[in-house]
Image (cartoon, rainbow, N blue to C red):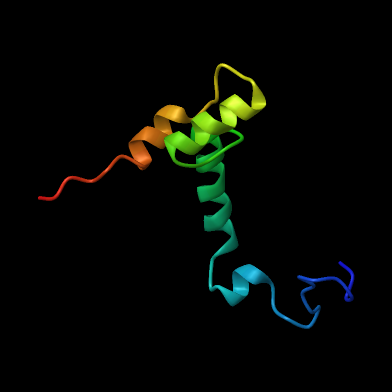
Length: 76
């Protein structure tokens, strides 16, 4: 928010979704589906398992979705 800080975005620039030509409503729809499938963390299964260990939890919602999404693709 401060202009003297690294990463400051000029107020005169269009909003990020506009600059990327992304429809805001569609983006929210995709984001909601991701949150429903994964919960608080999204990533490869190994990264999620590591996060579980760092958080000292036994369970992290979304591991099944991660395994499906990040499964190695077999050549046809």
